[in-house]
Length: 351
Picture 1 (cartoon, rainbow, N blue to C red):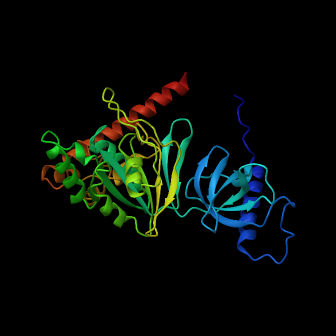
Picture 2 (picture 1 turned 90 degrees about the horizontal axis):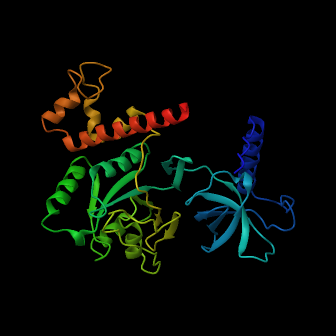
Picture 3 (picture 1 turned 180 degrees about the vertical axis):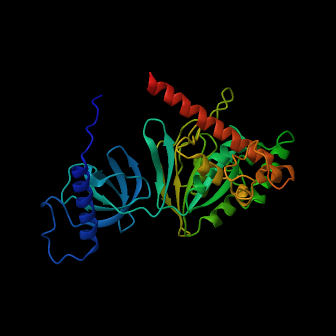
């Protein structure tokens, strides 16, 4: 595969200036049609990206209809939830109804790290992030904590959903109760539900009113099943977790936005096997554990690493039962994972 040529600073600036001009032009009234690039395109109009696939996207037009659009090369990064400016084709011999010209600045975005693509946006212009965990494939605080750390870098409300209540029995009942209590005690909203039995679905619906919410989590935790329970008419394909590997299957391949009758919108996003943290500094990871914060500036030494340092206020809070040791061990594990990944990449680059 040929290596993509990197744009010069002047080329990038010219593309950015043209992009901003399209946004400004669309936002002010036009007195005539001299702004049209050619007679093949209609007037500029606003829309929102429902889903993105390759160099195409489905856009919701002002009438609430979804139309398939090409994406202009200069439009820049585009993701589900983006508010865009697009132009309809006056005539088209294909399923495509128009072309996206520009993307408005995002009010918020949720990204996940990808070793090949860097930081990969999952959804834009969202108000709430619903982190889905489940008894199967694995109900592990360390996985939940990774998502919470990422959300804590943003000004967005997280809600924790523990799915597959139908699998609770005497062997795991205490585990679920302990995890629910641990996160609720530090201020997070937690909902235990079963998408399969539709238990807890009404409670989730009440959280979605007038908000744009994105479902995130491991593959196989039941994000699409929850969306199906909220919107039965959608009927998203779902698959069972493998009994042998206990790994989830990626059934959602691209994020997609759905409208609700209560004024809200939900975005179903693809699952991941592991949500990495290598893109964050150690201080950002530490800040992601909200209950640690009151103790971080009470340590004896300013450069305290909050591990085996003498006079560490965080260690004392753990010993006094004020901070969960489970969460602290999760923090240490995440730091170690980031260190291991960094060393591995440095080793590859040196060869």
